Length: 373
Ligand SMILES: [Zn+2]
Image (cartoon, rainbow, N blue to C red; front, side, top):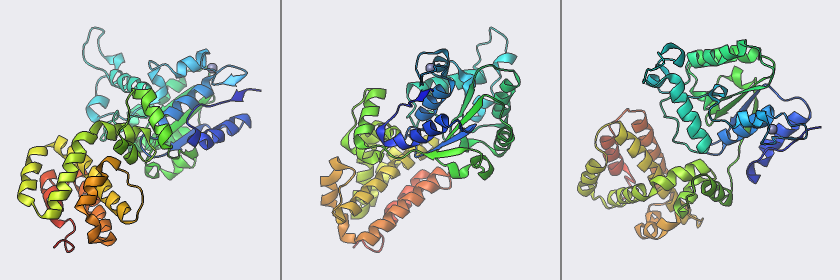
């Protein structure tokens, strides 16, 4: 009998055990939904599971060296993936309809680029654009491959499956109602609640829990070679992908967020507005940058709450300057309200309801309003 042995961090052993048991007991479902926070390792597990399902070794799966394992590990095997694309990318011509010496990028080129990036760093949260979607054409294109008969096992990973538009979701649902033999679907999602309930009910769902700090550090080191700053590790909340994201952006954002907080508390608005104008010029990039800065700001106010409750802070390097600012004097209620205000401002900017500058100015004046003297 084959022994199944999926590799991964110890903290997520339970999720792998669930899959291994289903394989051993010969009741493996034809669709699996891997849920969990962003950057927590859903795609990494999807690749490991794809290897296991494709592995032809009779003793241990995944063996890592059979043809099946190699195919599952091959970034060139783009047929095994459905990836959200930006509209312009999805509308690019297909390789089958461009002349051979055309230099224009095809839809397959874009997809191959993303798949290669995912294999390089399956934890990264910044590969797929936040506006990318999975179109019905992508689902249909993927399904047309199955009309051809196949001897071996076929696995399709649908990354960030919640980005399927309605037509795509309905097309996938039809497929899931009658999955071709030897075919498996692995869906990943950090907001699985957005998936059709009818799709979810046809999948074996499992949720990946957060990792320990030691596991996060080890994965980041092995994947990118980087060492994490203590603050990035503290903010990661057990997600290697988020740790990478914060580590990359912390130097600039932590300073801006702290100055925002300080100027706002001290009512130093003219200096603050001047800085905001300089840091967040108009445009889409400014909105994304503002949302990111507000994320850091929310963590800082949260740390002020933690200081008040004598709990360990997440931004250890920032602790001293935060203590000097003494936000605790406003009380827990004011701090909790401030976090809500920050989050709702971020949502407004992300939804492009307000210009970033105006929303940030409004927030800076309203922050701790009624508590400041
Ligand atoms: Zn193998």
